[in-house]
Length: 120
Length: 265
Image 1 (tube, rainbow over the protein chains, first blue to last red):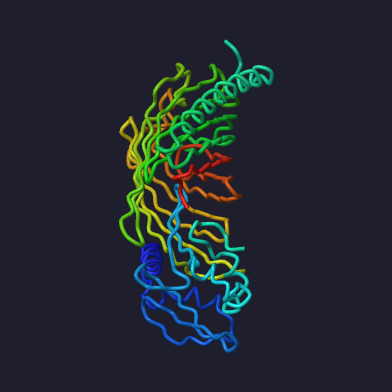
Image 2: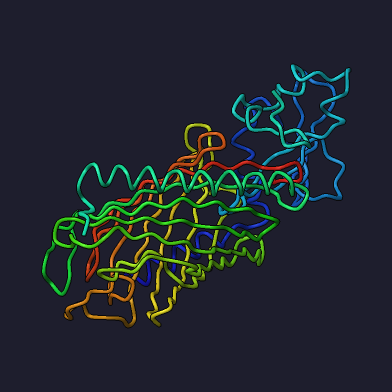
């Protein structure tokens, strides 16, 4: 019985399908936001009151507004962080009050700058 | 012979240990700052362990053992190098004998294998130590290896934060040739972590002789660890529950980590 519990625990940890990578992020999206496109590496969002769409990428090659990255504290396990691009943060035509409407406040709190600092 | 559990004697010895430690830490900090282009970060760790109940060959003992250590560690990339000063006093069933202290060199390396596993190697080498009355050694020399499986994306979502689970399996061999296996799991949420670990010695002393060597006990047990990250500080509370031979110890640790310019994100 103990072996079975251990086996399913390990299986559960290792079984993160590629599309499932977006599962956690989707919890941070506002309910009125529409998912326009979802692939293994890109998630494109549209807000009914915002002209431009939001591009979120998992890989370096993607020109995204927000990208996934990994952080690791000494002695700890790597964990996913979300990093806003300089383009998104510095575009005067798109202040945070506008693009921030795509996400719940919890996401804006954990979103990082490329330097690693909080965006707030 | 002085009594280690005498309050005034204990206080003097603790002050002496603290002063030595401050000297060690300040010199280590100074070197690390000068060499900040060489190191990513500096970690200062302090720990106090208390054993008030132990089990040896089925007999329950009531010792009063305090073991504290201070550990200064510099890190570069996935590797660390440190110095650990350890200090132990005994009373109760294991009373008598002078306090013990010793210095260890520590090293670790973290092999990042892929997106869901890493291999941790940790080593300690005893450099100097006082003579021991009963082998509750002031230094340890051992090698530990842990294969850690983790989920970096997060498995759950509670209160606005993801939960990051992990599981690990490992082994430890020390200078006495005792081999221990361990298996465990845990999770991080927000800045809090909890881990449950089972450990089991595959050989070692059965604790029936005159001289009980704690580092060579044929032991088994479970440990429960809770951790919290508060800014640059990390606090940890660990409780051992013995199944066979050893102490039901309680350990409180505090770590302060200072990243340098080229440090971690």
